[in-house]
Image (cartoon, rainbow, N blue to C red; front, side, top):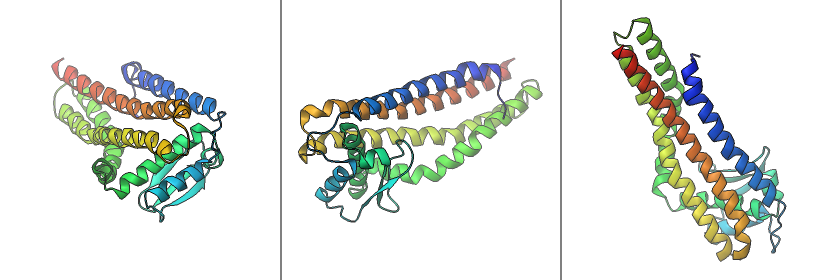
Length: 237
């Protein structure tokens, strides 16, 4: 892959710092509040099952998987997949994450628009992520090899167009994730799984997790801005 010093300074390093900061926040919040047990003693798996049943989603299975915070909802298999710590844990952190994933299952059942749009964008995002960066780098190499003339600039712009599909996917992901978090905060109290005063820890875990999606989008924006500016500057020299 083609990297240069400016890319490392203006894109790679800031992206690593931002994503690393929010990743540490999530892990720290989960570690802290995974030691705070829920007063009613529900495990993450039990909380998820209760929330799904209350929503009439008896067909959605709650299953356990390996990995740290590898929790997700699979709309294709209709499975709510929880990591071991969340599945078996009875902390407010475990319940919060399980409720968040249950929120996605409820979105799916309600045909929530942004979720449907995100699912439809997955193939395009894969193409943009795979080809976009390669085309941007290729265009920049062509541009500098030709002394700032030729089609290199337009190749860079074409790559940016492809890579923008990743940004579009991330933009659509934000309301999906924020809505699932909002739902989680409401339904766990309404279902009597935890009391409102216990939600403080759960909210901190979910809010920190939500910011990781913002960090990913910022990284994509930095990448696009970098290649556009480099292509524009090189073509003027």
